[in-house]
Image 1 (tube, rainbow, N blue to C red):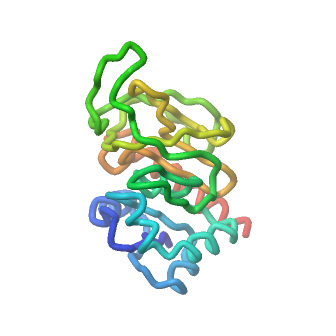
Image 2 (cartoon, rainbow, N blue to C red):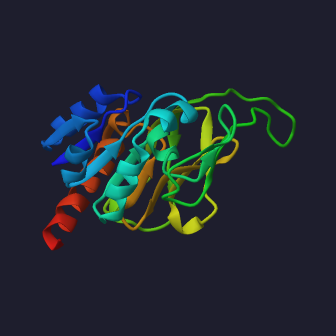
Amino acid sequence: MIGIVDYGMGNLFSVSKALERLNADYFISGDREELLSADALLLPGVGSFRDAMEVLQADTIKEFAATGKPLLGICLGMQLLFEDSDENGLTKGLGLLPGKVRRFPGTNAAGETYKVPHMGWNKLEFVNSSPLLKGLEEDYVYFVHSYYVSAENSEVLLAKADYHEEVSAVVGKDNIFGMQFHPEKSSKLGMSLLKNFLNLVEERKAVR
């Protein structure tokens, strides 16, 4: 049973529809006890990092993460897993993964400007092995974001993409995972990544 965290800032419809296509059981909730009872949590997110941290039940997410059960952050939800963001002033994140969230500067090393937000299809480059990437091939996924994660610890970087900066696209350590792009909108590879996450949930549930 997958719990989708409802804190008023996630694209709950598209994420839930993706789980339905994968025949996964899920519920949407903002209730602490319900969320802690889930086999895994999905933390979606759209909007401002600061606004999200103000309304998110951070203690509940941290408590769930400490159980060892899988947690997957998507888009803003992935950024919230890290230490802090400079969006609308420096704001502390959940601190479950090492790294900072920074805005695309909009100007490259040659002084040329580029479009922010980063919006469109970019190819993933796999960096470290992970159950999330098992059996998959590098392909294109769909991004929409103005901020990106600068992962200080390369061990948490599973796949990257290039948009004038190195974008941490898939991250993971122990039971904590994140995807900067929208897997539910990313065609075959996106759905395969979600399927691998569900497989991981089943495997870890079996050994608990």
